[in-house]
Image (tube, rainbow, N blue to C red; front, side, top):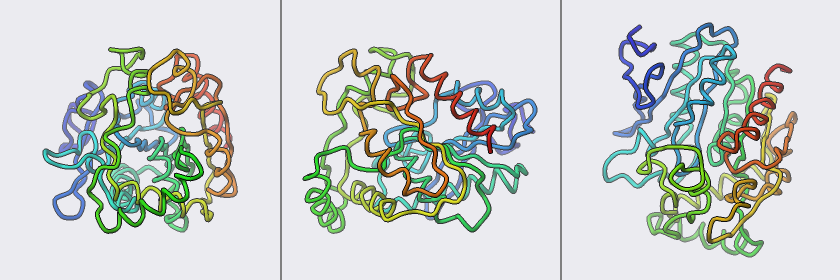
Length: 318
């Protein structure tokens, strides 16, 4: 071990004392980064956190919540996100969400084979919730996962019926032929203003890694997401217990921040989460958290405390 609490090839992380980071080489010159925080007594196994679009891991209170409860905590910065983002790289760009399985698999190998954990809980937020659901389905026979927790997973496009149908058909065609064009320059400022401390939120994070208006949306990336949605809508076979947490309501398509943004999901439609949750597997529990924002763990203190308590109760029950 070194002073970071990790292995000798780990580096001190930007989050400071108690956190370490290591690169996970992927195919070609690609790479991801695995962040780690150790519990004083890791008696309950490990938690692996996977972030969403235009995001990276910075939520130290989440890591410390789990380490305080006897889990070693790990978080992935997926390829082309956060710590893994390289100069000149299109942030978050992939043409197939299953490409991210490579870094999830690499993280699981570290957790299980190198660090010796027999029990693993995966937590996925937003796009990370979609990725981890698809991954858990594909790895259902490999006995690598014990439970899945989804924090406002992206299970459908938060748009009108016309855009979800005809628009998706157009995106699939364009994205296959020309994946690089930008369909939208970002997602708007409402959610970013709700969470960053320079505006109306509590949190400080690197705006190069998590911009207020998110990253540009490329045609090939959105095609990949819609293909992931379609696969989930046909039905997955995730065989471990699943907890899906979502806000109690959505507040969509607002152009400017208002106080209502602090008590609703301003990014995704929670009705879609409830609708598609049964398609994930046979043991899915859905809990709506009153006054939650899109990232329930970044919501107001009483709200995030309740969300984490729901996770605790779920993990204690399995």
